[in-house]
Length: 324
Image 1 (spheres, one colour):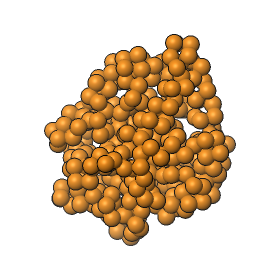
Image 2 (spheres, one colour):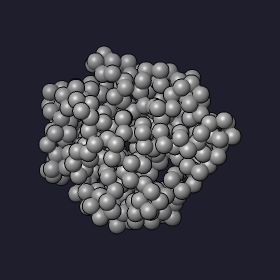
Image 3 (cartoon, one colour):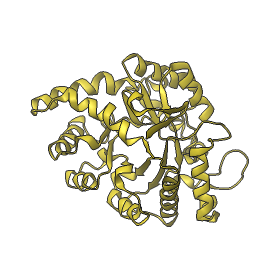
Image 4 (cartoon, one colour):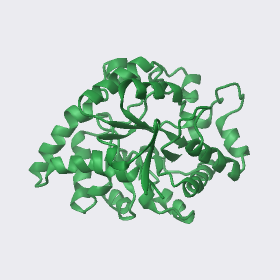
């Protein structure tokens, strides 16, 4: 029997509803704190909650918060947002990417993340990730709904490979779905190769930031493995236009991969949020991008409404399920 592990407990997959598959709600990454990068600190839960309420009021039902421990999670704050809004939230165990580990860990531990990962045994890292899924995160009883690793731009460092393998083994121990960070959409196929060495079926993987590398050949090769592709930069026109993203998505649909596509915004800056910095906010995708996609999919000969049902409801139900 499958289930989805949310911040508030385990639920049946068919109750998940309309889902953003990769967001950040409250986070204070130590790396950016040390460098005074205020825009990258989502440190006002009330403002985040206002955006979540806008998403809910437009029909949004669930959000996957992809914030790992090295990106400055605040589990109690996110739990309060879930309670206040009624929106289902999934949390993330595991790690992000190596350059973010060049910062002192919070909480008085007085060592850097990269030192911790380098010094820890593989068994210790596996145990840490498993505990976040099965016991709770940051001293709470709130358990993670997915496990995560990340890699750098056109490279997988030694420590990143170590965390990838630890996360793969934690997946085997818990059956939690896996999410990967790719820097600018690179190294997805290389990640999958390493995961397969650890016995991971790519059907249990969602690969992040695929729209940051709008390469239909690469997308097709990733999709051919069975992995989910997360197009999670909607609204970030500084990288690519929405037309580029929609073309990439429809190319995958044409190849028969509609059941492997996830869509979200990776809204991780104050300037992206409506109630922090007057950005597009969490309302943008459901209010503006969805109608545009339906229109353009129709022009291309597809049932856009049915595709949206897949991207935001049917696919997340499968992708984020623990398959026992």
